[in-house]
Each structure stands twice: as C-alpha cells, then as structure tokens.
Image 1 (cartoon, helix red, strand yellow):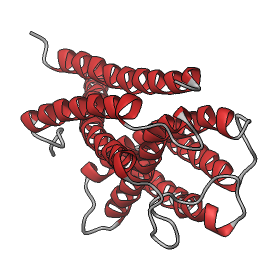
Image 2 (spheres, chains in turn orange, brown):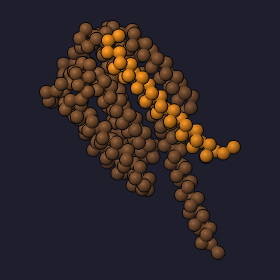
Image 3 (cartoon, each protein chain N blue to C red):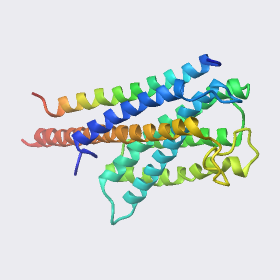
Image 4 (tube, one colour):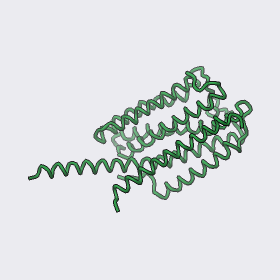
Length: 39
Length: 243
C-alpha cells in the first residue's frame, strides 16, 4: 500500500478517538447510575 | 421528563448495527475499494474524511434545530436543550476528525499538512465556534438561562456551516469542489469507490445516532444529579436554620 503510514494513522486514530469517546460516555453513565441507584 | 432519547433495546441494536457497519466500512475502505488513479492509496482516507464532515454538518444542524425548538415558546422543553448540547459535542469531535484526516491526506497529495485555504480555514473556525459553545454550556447558571444563551449561540454559530460548504464555490480554493454535491450535481466517483463512500456515510450516521442517544443519557443523569445536590444543599441549610 502506498502512503501506508498516513492511511493507517488516519484509520487507527479515528478508531481510537471514536472508541475512546464511547467508552468514556459508558463509564460515566455507569458511575452516574451507581450513584443514583445505590444497591 | 424522559431521561432517555431511545428505548434501551433500540439503542443497543443501533450500537451493534454501528459496529457491524464500521467493520464492513474498514474492509471496503482498506481492501475492497481500488486505489485511486491519481491519489493512489491516500484516497482511502476519504472514506473517513467525507463521512466525518457530513456528520459534523448533521450534528450542528441538529444542534441548531434543537436550539430553535427550545427558543420557540410552544415547543420549549428540556429535551431540545439536551439534544442540542449532546449533538454539539459530537459535532466538535467529528469536525476535529475531519481536520486531522484532511491534514493526513493533504501531506502526501498536496505536499503540505495545512494550507490557508477557504475550506480549511472556515472548517477550523467552525471547530472553534462550537468549542466556545461547549465552554458556554459549562458556565454555571440556572438551567433556563443556560439553555437560552446556548441556543442563541448555537444558531449564530450555525451560520458558518453553509459558508464551509459553499466556500469551495465562492472562492478559488486548493480544496477540490464537492465530489458528489457539486454545482452540477455530477458525481465524480463511481463503482466500488462510490459504494464505499456512501456506506461510510451510512455507518457514520448510525454511529452518530447511537452516540447521540448515549450522550443524551449522560447529560440527563448529570442534570438529575445536579438537581438532587441543590435540593440536598437547600434541605441542609433549612435544617441548620431551624431551631
């Protein structure tokens, strides 16, 4: 693949940013739900 | 007042659909689609850059719509302020991705990471405008006062969206004109490459809908917690004053 360093960086970066953002949201939702409804 | 935008089962299904479509997009974007005759494999970044830009437009459009619905007295409801806030954050993330992916593509194809080009500059302005909007949402105020000033700011910031889109027609730019939505509506992409691009738009739209629902849920939980903390503080103050 030509320009592989740019292409792979772009795809990996997109995955990390979007995946990281989703995980951050889920972690905070879980924490907020735990505080609201303690067992 | 609902603290969810979608039913949990619908949200979960949307999440799995997003994941599945993103995997298919990666397969086509990295292997299925042929290299471009001019740009070679650098073209593979376009299968992310273009959908990210589309989602940025969509997200800021939803923010503007939510803001207008909140400002209109007949439709005013907390749900619209939350939708606007959640969508703006997604818009900022997708605009940042658009800029970074464009820069990664620009280096091998244009020979530069950045150019002071109308499309690039107006997109950077868009990013900073909505970053300011997100900062505005964080300034402490009563829910109504915050929603009102944010709604006005969102509608003002949205003026930049058509400027970004038409910048390639209004000014002479290094950035190419629209590949699909150009002045003649004459698509300059065909076959597997066109399919991959459209599939990318679909996959990112599904992901946007899923993330919007999750971010909305988090906003609702945060606002609920803030409300309970205020009520608790008032109760403690009243208790302390009562002999």
